[in-house]
Image 1 (cartoon, rainbow, N blue to C red):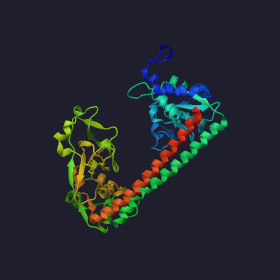
Image 2: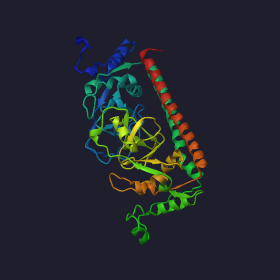
Image 3: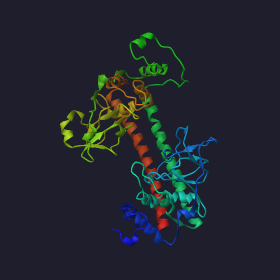
Image 4: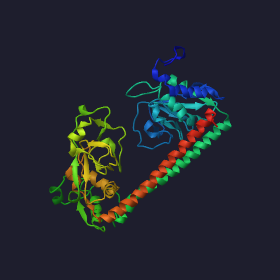
Amino acid sequence: MVRKGKIEGRIDSNTYHPERTRIIHRLKETNWELKPLKLVAKFSKNIVSQNSENLPYVGLENIESDIGFYVETSERESFGSAVKFHKGQVLFPKLRPYLNKVYLAEFEGLCSTEFHILDCKTIDNRYLAHFLRSNLVVNQTKYLMSGNTLPRLQTSDIKNLLIPILPKETQAKIVALFEAAYAQKRAKEAEAKALLAGIDGYLLNALGISLPQPTEKKKFFYTRSGKVSSGRFDPYYHQSEFEEFERALRSGKYKMQKMKNVAYFQAGYAFNSNDYVEKSDCYLVTIKNILKNEINLENSTYLPKVFFDKLPIFQIKKNDLLIAMTGATIGKVGLFNSDKKALLNQRNGIIRSNNLNYLYLMSLLNTEIYQKFILRNSNGGAQPNISETDIMKIQIPLPPLAVQTEIANHIAEIRSKAKQLEQEAKAGLDQAKKEVEAMILGDV
């Protein structure tokens, strides 16, 4: 309920959401001078149609949510138009404000026209970037979106965001606090990344496998006609590096076995999209849910609960290994570590075995070398896919179950330590945000 006299501008219920109005009220209760963004910063509009200076291009995909780190991706080959920005300016996105992709430019470049380029007149650009990234702003802007397919902010709403004008000393303190939190986050995430990157080396070393040193790929190579006639007529499949990998695997400590000799495979069911429901106790696991080493049930698709009992063969059990058989995540293997009721969609598979430790097998199949073997056996171009037959003919080293368990336990410890570091990194930044918000709202 909103009093008619309090309606300003938009007649839109979300505009007056209690969370948004409460933040504005709290800001107005402080002793700080508040100014709309349009009076604090200049909005730059230096639009270009070509990259004559060969400057780096920044799109929304290049900015990490919540923290504003720049993430390098492949170079943008072409664009219709872009906006030129300079080092030290603030890039504030119009699209999907809930993603919180505010960037403090670390270099000169070009960016999508979906960014506003801000340059402050009276306050530190660094302070502005941190404030615009705070929950005090995100929890306002997420209620100001318009549009469904591409929810965005209107320029007038952005320009009228209230900015607290803090003393320079307080701004500097906020900047220093965030920069320390970011540095700690980067350090902990780098340590976690290094731990995870070492898993492949540990696993192969434990199996006594020494891979050949990488060499420059040959532009052409020869193979025997008998190998082609009795198998795939596919130059990628017959690359010499695969033969070298196979020799390295056979030279390890343990005997190689085809997957079909030690494991059972169950492909998913072709559900009809008309079967989907908005919410249910029955989850449908699709390609989007299968990630490397995990099954993520966020943003799930659901089926009527009765489907679960009707289709027992496609039920996913706790500790099942699921493999994506098509699309961008093809070959990725994740462990279903949940008690939720779930069924498996087509173009995915369940791997079960009584002779294998599931964590060992998952870690092995997710190594770089086995991901290459899986892609080697795939078909298709833009949408690659792999069959059950091709998955099950892949050969794996088969140490005794006790050795598999030892390897799996050690890898689990590594992943647990990496996850702890990632959680510590996030917690440190969350704490910094709380301290800054308390400083701004006068709670300290």
